[in-house]
Length: 188
Image (cartoon, one colour):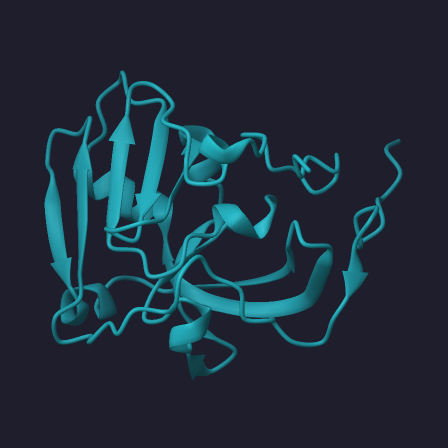
């Protein structure tokens, strides 16, 4: 029988609230102009407006968030749309093996397709019962609870299915692709 693991990965300390951390300042994203583009190795690329995104089925995931900077926040209630739902609508090619998430400008991260389709990976627009604050990625951010926070892209505007892995912003700067907090895969 496997032993349950501690909630706090080695080298992490618990904080009560999400600190504000980003590459560059938070952009001004008006939900009236926001859209999500889903494309790449898919049969049916599409784009969603904010109002169309709001109509999709919502899921709430209660999860801890672990940052490579050494802090963790427990029990965040993220609410949004499962990435699996968004990917399925695009009808991925059998050759698609990775998913790249981007803010449409500077920042991106990729995940193996199986990781992106996990039942706890979503594009969140609420945390608790509140809209996601701009400094924390609002209106929409990726949430990947089993990875370090650098994989949870803020201000998501694009989902691209890829046949080959395309290292993201931090991987291009030496961080490990796995981003596994339970293995301490920080890369520094």
